[in-house]
Length: 239
View: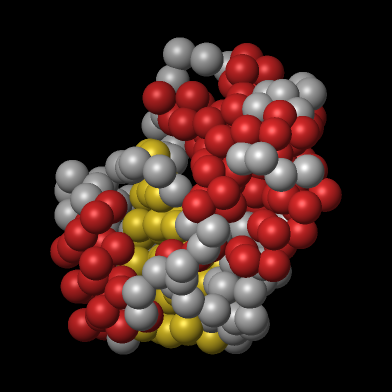
């Protein structure tokens, strides 16, 4: 996973991959290099999955998966189905992201067909972007001048995702970033990111990403994702 500015993370695989059912609190773009992506019974050249949707996902080629803030696409709180992308749209989004992982260009291209970001309270943005580093959510609420209960309600109303879940997501991004960069083991990454222990991190990765921490270690995650080889479903690697 590669973090590009605030609120965007990028996964890439050079081979087909399939993840188990999970529910992430972010928009997810899956952009295969040349094959297709399946989410449940839906399949297309690419897909945009809304926050909070429980789903499994598999690709028939190398791919890039981009996770974006819940407010990045309008209607997060009410979206109930993935949006299939045709080959031309998928290619434009991949080209916008490019090898330099240009988050700003990707957001601009995404807005062309999905619409501009939803306006959210500045206190919500601040809380979402800082909650992962806070020892207690009470401190985040105090920082924006709200009671903890009021902040939780405001986040849930404007974003559609509980603040506690968003906090776990931010910590997950930190932990997986450490694993991808190498030089640390899973237990160390868990502790440094604020998880109780390695088991807590493992449960969270499975619940929010459908993978295991070990599958994200260097050598298993490829930042280039250029392969377009098609395979049968039984050839895909498990999570």
